[in-house]
Image (tube, rainbow, N blue to C red):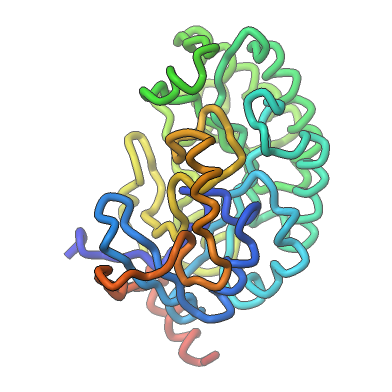
Length: 321
């Protein structure tokens, strides 16, 4: 049944910046061949995922700083299909306290491209939000600089406009609401910049049609993108998405909420930067869980991990095995 389909796409960075802060743990999980993930809604429910090439179609990364894992990244890329989202925005330490400078981020992305190839990297410029300091003009100036620097090293650029959820009003009172006029002005100019540098530009989980500006629709993690990046073929499946207006294929996140110490003011995955810093004390690099250890009351379920690969691709894996 469609609703019972369990993906074999492992996401390492949706809930926390695992690569930046927990690289040692992540590498150990792939070395030992499995990981445990606690259900954020039902904390005594834990899912076990096998981290072996026959059980994982692709490992998808999302980070603002790949520097800590670069020396050992080949231990994963040598064995698995992979795809990398690298977030580099216009913001400074006032909004992203734990993030490298733009210049250092650009340098790190270029080093990542040398290791994995540009076809596996998406540069994320999101969320786009406005304050008195981060004006439309400042966004466009920074986006132009980044597009010029990064286009030769990335497969595409993905952007989205900030979602105004309740936490944001508390954590970021200085935010200025984006009007439809603002969005179209930004999208039009970003589209023109992307065209100038030959950069493929698309939205992510964003309401509105910006195709008139040469901007492609949502779906930043599709089987088509992952397949082309790795030279493999996937079944033709409907992409359920992870949230509203999302055209992505479903994936399973092995991280944990409230555990990213970067302190980004717009973060949806942390209740507050203080809580995230406090939760770090529960991290043990040797535990199969990102935070804490298994408890006696926990119920561990094995994930079915059914493959999305096309049948002929599965046959080839059988031959290689």
